[in-house]
Image 1 (tube, protein in one colour):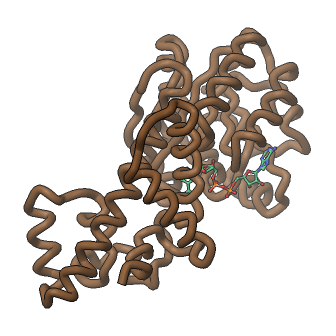
Image 2: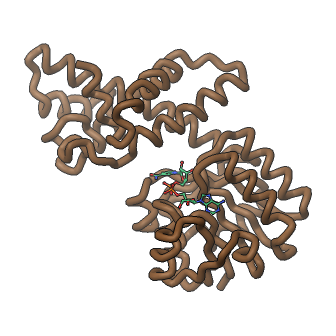
Length: 289
Ligand code: NAD
């Protein structure tokens, strides 16, 4: 079994680290927020007063942090303090450029490093069914498998450094566009006198089918577990979709890409997040009437 340093024990990192403990790994954690530390300790994680101390005996270092700036600062602190031979895995959602920068820095210090952002939310983190999108060298990917498996439903090696983050922003840009399109369709259907259930049955059996309707249906009724049945309690919060679309727009700008629908979706979510950051992102339908 492996000694794993886990930095960032928040909504996602807390349950991910707990699953590593349950599968027999030794987990050394750090988080600056006392409540996160308390919850982690209750789940069998040994916590330390600083990131530098938490990585002191690590064979694997996992970061699950809020932003690229924080991950870069954290790497600058811990790279000189981590034992030779450790494998670094960053599961935070950050920009492709930041992911490639920390990869280079880890390599410069002699460490293998992977970007491994996730989808599946807090539910997936708790159940150990996250989808990991991984970027980095083949050898590092093979070495990471045993660590990722207790937290994962699916692990996909997407390519070289940054490819995991690239896959995540592309997927979430598609998801944002689809959730808006599905919302528009249900609003139009209502105005045409078409019942929600009838539209749901047709789309899910036809060419318009996608997760945004089949699982995350934005009107109450057809899918009893969708956030629309629960006052749009997330689910996947608008704030997080807005964050991910910001990263997608950074990537569109830095590559000189054209993404007219993704760009419009990002703008709609930016506006929606000003008032409704805490609602599930399918609540965008309420702005489409
Ligand atoms: P969170 O804010 O709940 O947790 C982040 C934790 O990092 C906090 O507890 C914070 O105190 C801690 N932290 C901040 N600076 C730190 C440092 N220097 N060292 C150690 N810990 C530090 O956020 P979250 O929802 O757990 O998300 C974490 C990452 O996962 C983000 O990048 C997010 O975009 C991504 N993500 C979140 C979800 C989700 O549904 N919540 C889904 C997929 C991906």
